[in-house]
Image (cartoon, rainbow, N blue to C red; front, side):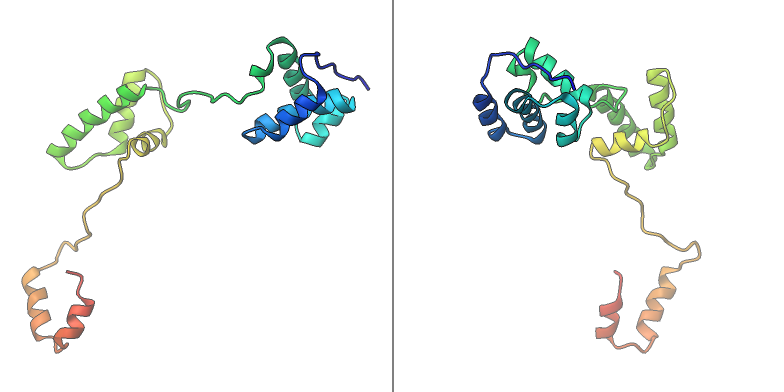
Length: 176
């Protein structure tokens, strides 16, 4: 099997020390692959089997280390939210407009939010995208308590007074 070559910028002991002092698992795996290639002389396939990645990932780690240096080992965040079509400010603006309308109408329907998003970005979005947007910005579902259409408050109060249930039990089971 082909052995991979790690450049001479660091010794095997330095790689081992970096591996033990790594801050997360991705960084640890990269240092471990470099250490095994340099100190043990293992092939990329053997290293990949031990770490649990593909041999092409090991090739990529070693190549980046040889050409870029140790900066390539450190984990970099992937950046901003990759699931949104609008920027955070655009989403805030959209939700503030929806909030103003909701104060007048007292009802926000996700179908209308979805239509507004699609109109703004010029493409269709999935059914759950508006729910994700609302969740990202801390909106939650608030619905009124259910009421029967034939409910009569006077009849309920009369029943409470004349039902024969002692007041202490009525207070225990009362919802109001």
